[in-house]
Image (tube, rainbow, N blue to C red; front, side, top):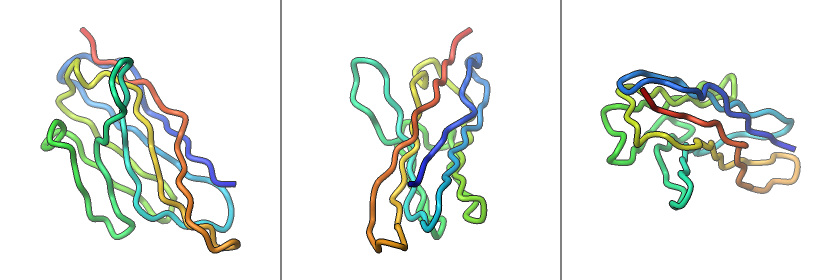
Length: 121
């Protein structure tokens, strides 16, 4: 069983910064592409950024230049550094990973439980 656990959310003033973490745990797995999504009530979940196992990154236009995705493969952890935060960045942020299970030789997708980010004065 592979689990993803997010942390680092909270309440920040506009213009502030936060760093989210997503840690994977379990046995017999490797992580391929990992992603951050966010969801606001009444809207569809949207992709924020993604990073491959080799470190290639992609960003949604609405976070380019403000957010930075990274990962530490040795720690099975992904990060999202968020700068210049805006009220419209308020959402629940979820991590997602493409996971390879070596014992059963299969690929699965996993989601974390989400972490709330609130940007407000």
